[in-house]
Image (cartoon, rainbow, N blue to C red; front, side, top):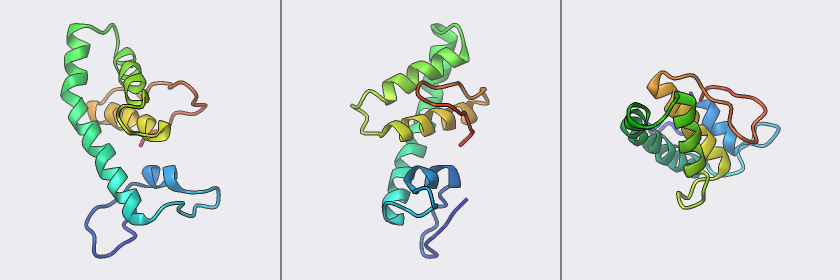
Length: 113
């Protein structure tokens, strides 16, 4: 986890910092922006836990199906998330639920948040 600003208590995990880093590991945005986006994405993942569980128990045939559907909805544009953020939220949601991380469209490798 990374806390690049000693005055702020929000610790941004390296997996999220990577979303905003170039090939050399330098941030393309300010740490303040990264922290704000992280807070939004973490809050969204936490808020989706109950909804994902309800969908799984009522409608979905599999955990992967639930997560794939949520990923598609997050990437639809109305959420204000980038594709990379939608992927991160989905993988974080899987982690919070204790479910296996799904293979996501347009993604060669699956890594936990």
